Picture (spheres, rainbow, N blue to C red):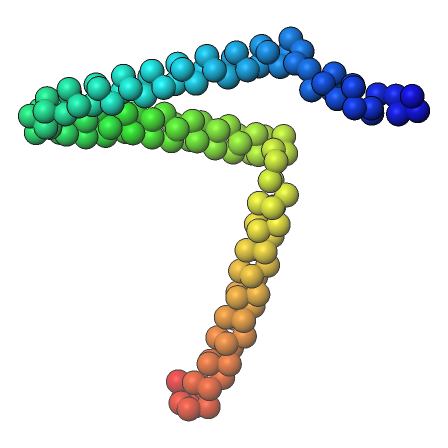
Length: 142
């Protein structure tokens, strides 16, 4: 008997069902039966309620649209309010020097705007002097 477990007589032992497999199969069959029952119940309910839904659709569609708009409007107001509160809180922390996340970007942009304005001012002063010199040459008595 050099073959041990791999012999022909022990093949039935490898495929024997244990309690876990039996419980799994029972759960699978039970859930399948329940889902099949619910699918049949849904189909019967749709067949019976279809005429009622068709008759009431002129009333149900506007009511549904009104409810949808109300819910979306309320949720939007809540979320915009939360965004406003968090923005005001961030700005309050930034103004008081508490360095909230992203404040380094705001500082960088602020410095870029200040530098650009300074360069624009210097350029405007240069252009103004150039135009005044041109005016003096064009009208020497002025």
